Image (cartoon, rainbow, N blue to C red; front, side):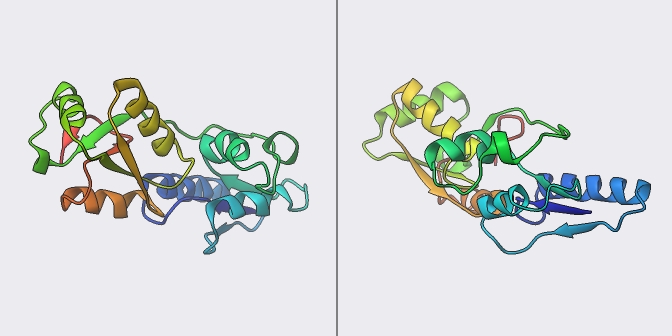
Length: 180
């Protein structure tokens, strides 16, 4: 059995995929491998989508690669409806905004006011183009009338590091609203 993970190593989703793999390997006589090859996230989904449909290949992924990515890029290389079968829902996360203390923002209202007063867009990170974080932040910008600029990263932690360092204005992430 193979579990292909579409997330950067060390993040919450990677840990969840590892826990699921450990749980399955303890209960299954089949050999279990975690596959974290260095491929683009969508290529990992495509790998499983085109693998032999024998029930031994699984992918741990998100809504962004199953619903958003095929709409954004019709030539993505897989059809989530016909090439994949959902077998389990592992977890979900609430949506929150995290801001750098460098901007002296103490509330969401302060943040929106800062964005509306700025001639420059407020920068934010996500784990990639078409990800939940990307689309939610763009929706937030349009809904509030503030200009936002997307800075995509390969995983959550590099963007969080830049936020803490004051290089970004905010980040949509799964946690409570707080300052870093």
